[in-house]
Length: 112
Image (cartoon, rainbow, N blue to C red):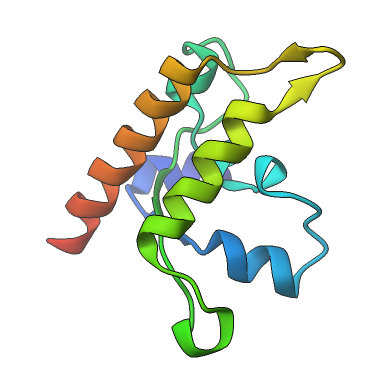
């Protein structure tokens, strides 16, 4: 189904803090946004990822007390510090390329 969504050009809006607080999600680095789009993080090697258009957003600010800047910062921090055993999963450079790509997708979504 993810490949169909990607093929149709559908955008998925992700609200990391809201998703973490109201779901069974355990941490930001396990957020499904990475399963939807991981191109810069995996150097295009993950053939199972559909590369869906995604954006990082906020949910109800009054309830979750967050900002768009904070959501991006939380995701960047989590990905920069994600580890597999004793090794970092992603380089800082790759994380910031991913963040910038997601930011640009969000801007494209805004104007469609």
